[in-house]
Length: 416
Ligand SMILES: NC(=O)c1ccc[n+]([C@@H]2O[C@H](COP(=O)([O-])OP(=O)(O)OC[C@H]3O[C@@H](n4cnc5c(N)ncnc54)[C@H](O)[C@@H]3O)[C@@H](O)[C@H]2O)c1
Image 1 (cartoon, helix red, strand yellow):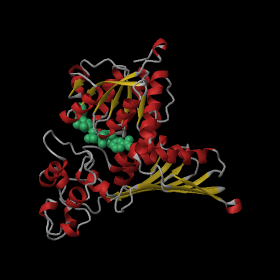
Image 2 (tube, helix red, strand yellow):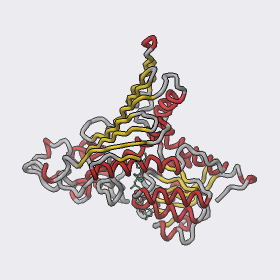
Image 3 (tube, protein in one colour):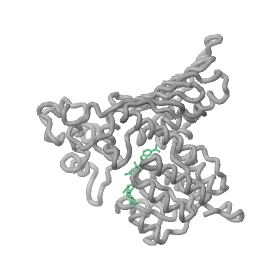
Image 4 (cartoon, helix red, strand yellow):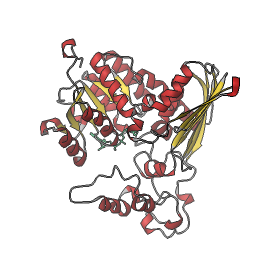
């Protein structure tokens, strides 16, 4: 819905579909900036989550709905829709929203197949609405600094890049072995679910198309053949739990990590919910006895049309939970790990160090979630179509991810 010129200073109205973890990050922007954006509806299956958002934003029953299919029969009037459902529910609500003329902020990955990604882009173009994809790294101060250093060309031209995404054992066992992203058919192959951000970042830096790629990887460790003797279906029943680095008891009950998104029903405590998960829920399962099928390690090698070569690696078996990038240029090199960025110039051998330790690991992806939301809201308000993470730009990184998956499965080099 286009905002008319005389309406340009009223807040942009939005409805959120899928009021879970990610949605609440973007809604924080609405909470801080009521003059710029107003939440006028929430669509969420889970009663606890829907009620929480309704209460926080003072929404009445007519502004709340449980399922997006029902919502689109008679949608609440708004300028834009935030789609933050799991990725097997991105395509359908996106198409419904676009067809009804809403602008869309869509969580990544765009959808579950390349064809669906392209269809969303095409529909948005035909309808003349904005679809922005939440590639938050493009709004993150550390990654923006790397981009700025490359774009000034003060270190010359890029020759090669080594980029590593360390997903780490805790995030991986929580999300990609026990949790939501464990099965390709529920979400996507892990490269797409987790690393479309990384591929998007690499394309953003090199500003060139991929010419050739190859990929390797597998589900090497987290399956029943590797279950230690004495293990059980649940960590609480396991006789070797004490020596297991992947224990759910240690992660949730003892260290109390990765519990932020456990819903606490009225009358219960977070401890009750942790115990429920350990005894009954999906998060109490042994990592060797889950129904997971996504990879636990993967590499992608690319040659770009500009002859730049890129090596990307996604690692699970590490205590790190960060991204590291080493960029070799004709007149220097850039080396960063999200905390420190080192820039070395070959001439004079000088080094400049940028320190990001004060923002590394801070909430909202170091403010990037809020900056992305601001850009989207501004684009809707001003009908500006050239967003940093517009759908047509994002489809390119998804194309690379899907083709890398094809290369991994078919064990062959893909030439574009
Ligand atoms: N941009 C990023 O950095 C980033 C980070 C993590 C996750 N994500 C992506 O964000 C999306 C959401 O992830 P999340 O962690 O917020 O998940 P989540 O489970 O916390 O939230 C999803 C919500 O959608 C709701 N939902 C499911 N079906 C629905 C339906 N038919 N109608 C209405 N609501 C429905 C669920 O009840 C849930 O509350 C995923 O695509 C994920 O890959 C992006």
